Amino acid sequence: MNKLTITEVEHVSGGNPYLVGVGIGMVANYVYESVGGKAGIDAGFSAVGDYLVEAWENDPVVSLF
Image (cartoon, rainbow, N blue to C red; front, side, top):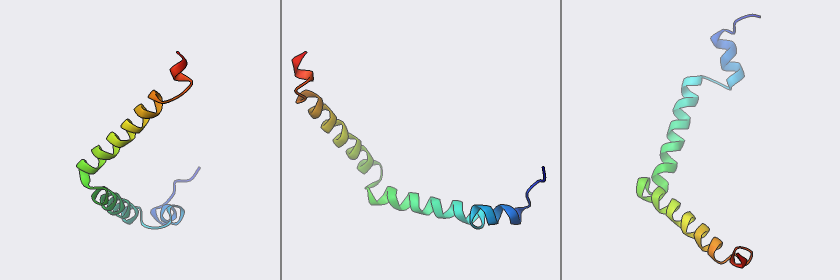
């Protein structure tokens, strides 16, 4: 089995691995800021939790028990 050279790795990964990592970081930062940072993420989790609790309480099958 042969070791891959950096050029072969770049061809397989679709480009420079460092630039791919920087691109992913930029996209993640954009998504984080677009949802409102930590407060937005907390509000999203809270909304999902409230929805699941309401769905559980109003489930006709669960109310039989």
